[in-house]
Length: 183
Image (cartoon, rainbow, N blue to C red; front, side):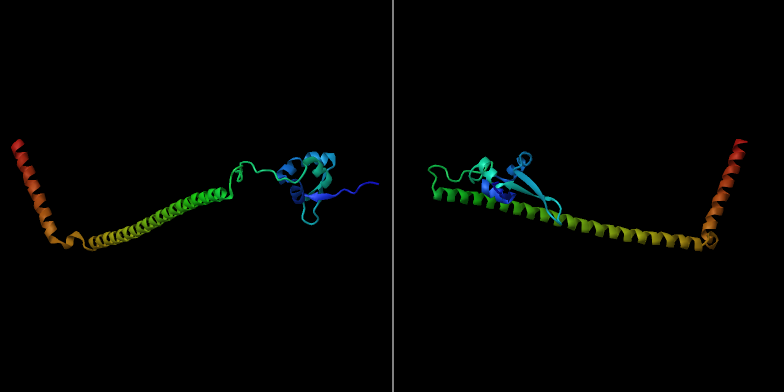
């Protein structure tokens, strides 16, 4: 009689074998070719659920001893007491607290710099408004001076014509004297 195969999903397979899901996904193409893994479409959602043959996983990967994470520190070495482990963890926490405090100080300094830049920007905007108001006032003043000079012709100021006449008369006398002396 043919034995019924028991299929487990990837979460159960990681617990069963102690291997990470990325390890199981790496060997998935090989297991599919050999018939020890399959993909079952998920209805309504798209995609597929990966299932593994339970007995094959136990045969291939053995017992459920979890893989050690690469780079993870060994907490309990030979001769290490619980107090030493706790002390080591406390030192790590203190170091992390110092890092957090330094990052908070850095964040506060950046916030102050942003506030100062915003204040400077506001001052520049105010200076620009004042310059625009001064420019408008000067334009108005120039326009009023131009209107006053157009409204008052030169004939209305007899003192100016007197001096123009005197200057013309003196230049004529000077020109006649020069002609007589040179001629």
